[in-house]
Amino acid sequence: MTNFETVEVNTDLLIVGGGMSACGAAVEAAYWAKKHNLKVTLVDKAAVDRSGAVAMGLSAINQYVDLVSGKNTVKDYVDYVRNDLMGITREDLVANIARHVDSTVHLFEKWGLPIWKDEEGNYVHEGRWQLMINGESYKVVVAEAAKNALGMENIYERIFIVEPLMDGDVCSGALGFSVRENKFYVFKAKATLVALGGAVHVFKPRSSGEGLGRAWYPPWNSGSSAYLTLRAGAEMTCQEVRFIPVRFKDAYGPVGAWFLLFKSRATSSLGGEYMAERKDELENWLPYGKVKPIPANLRNWLGMMDVMDGKGPIYMRTEEAIQKIADEYKDDPKAYKKKMKHLEEEAWEDFLDMTISQALLWASTNVFPEQEASEIAAAEPYFIGSHSGASGAWVSGPKDLAPAEYFWGYPNMSTIKGMFCAGDASGASSHKFSSGSHAEGRIAAKGALEYIVKENPQLKYDNAAIDEMKARILKPLEIYEAHAKETSDPNINPNYIRPKMFMFRLQKIMDEYAGGVSSQFKTNKPLLEKGLQLLNFLKEDAEKLAAEDLHELMRCWENIHRMWQAEAHVRTILFREETRWPGYYYRADTPKIDNDKWLKFANIKWDPKTGEWSTFTKDIIHIF
Ligand code: SFD
Ligand code: AMP
Image (cartoon, rainbow, N blue to C red; front, side, top):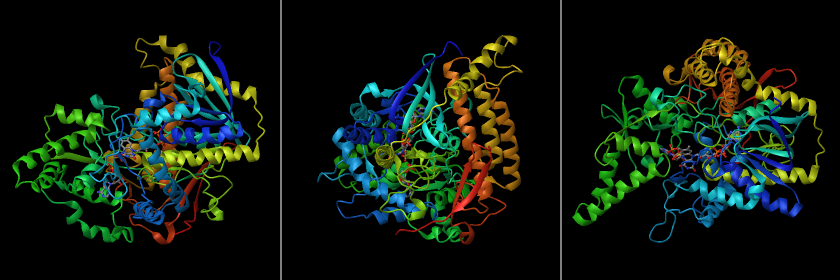
């Protein structure tokens, strides 16, 4: 690719990604870098103002521990997360985020994010850990602070990061390309912080045809965190712990505000409340079936049982919930009218702040939430280390909290020297959400700078190897150019596959063999083994991906990234021979939870030298 200029950027800390954790990292890194005269560079595939999961905004901050008031302790939060994840969690990591997250939330407020307040000036809680916000501009506010801290001259937007750059076993930066101009980027760095978000569209989505692309988590989170860490040879954890959220059907509006703030019930079309009617089922998943709140996957599972019994659709009873709150004012017609109007506004604002498409769907289908219930459904699986999933890299804990087995020098460093992870990129520390991801970005950035200062890594770069990688990364453009004119329809060509078709094939494999929506989230060993075989054929065909332009080149690599996330997932659910998270996936051949054998982390690693995968367990060590 002679017409592609190679741009080299030399820096100390490279932050890849521009989302919540990357913005946290930027703010913290700028502070420590100044003290040590170090350079920090941030690279995002989009524009930081509106990139990542918070692009559309949010209506709540889901992690606020409120340590100052003394109502909650760090241990309370750790207990909550461990229970929600059916016992599988790194307590040191969760505690580290929990003890720092409040300060991040206070920074958000200082930077201008409107957090709801009551008459006494206290934050309005959605639930015990969640705060309500006017969050349409949440990401813009958080991005502004990151941009001010680093300076725009240190921020590269619209650069898609493809591969890690390695000096043997040590991470020495990352490679990428501009999605706007013919430029190939070589970022050389003493430490790299991976904050590239989670993975969406690995599984066939419920939305297809006209609605294709719509998902709960953003479609532009395409598995790049998992790919970068896997390709570096980093140990990964909880790759089996996909997240399936229950969402308002078809536009994926979140349910948290309805369940927690409005205290709504969910019922089947026959009127039964599955959370009450199916309570006995929880006995099969002890001890977690008995904890409060009931773990997210078990809540899903009870609803799914109704659907499997043919009792669908499942409804969020918005009309009932609104009416119940308003009824408290029914003796005063004026106050009642005012309250109803206020509740209607809150109902719409929840979606207008966070999932605008849900408000559009309500509007276009004449839904008045105060008058009628809305359908909810379990979404397709996502890979996300920051919500109620747990997939991500296995990272070092903090020195003062982590047991020796979980500590190797610097907080949030992966098992690869010089490669740090935060947000969706780091595993087994769920329920960090937007605020905890930002806090974890700060923790990881501080750790990375400590690593740079203490170790001052001297890295070697092999220019010939970089040129080879450049050719490989740009190859889809060449393939298209060479063959596109050979057929009358450029979509149909025996010499290549376009990224969209490739993605459809990946999604079909995952949907049918790895327990997607159309398989009712169920799978078993033979299905998984067949899925792996088909993934291998897909991997062979990845060499034939073709790109018409830079945008499609990004699509090619996004799908390769997704494919690697898919393989790590299939291999890990195959390894964990039990059903621990019914409601996320159900292994029909090993249908029960098996605490004796499997109260463990299932970890996985790909060896860059041999190309072999290995799966193994790591102990769960309690610190609380
Ligand atoms: O209601 C590359 N989230 C919620 N968090 C909350 O605190 N409250 C809520 O209300 C939340 N809900 C919610 C949430 C998300 C979404 C989409 C909806 C509703 C509709 C979760 C948080 O948003 C989430 O936990 C954090 O944002 C995670 O942070 P992080 O940093 O891990 O991921 P990111 O913000 O998506 O950023 C990823 C960045 O990487 C870039 N990127 N850049 C270069 N090269 C590549 N190859 C790249 N691949 C990705 C992206 O552009 C982005 O900058 S509710 O449902 O619970
Ligand atoms: P969601 O909108 O589903 O992403 O949820 C937002 C927040 O509310 C997360 O912290 C969830 O764990 C929590 N949440 C949602 N639904 C429930 C529920 N029924 N019970 C307890 N917590 C919930």
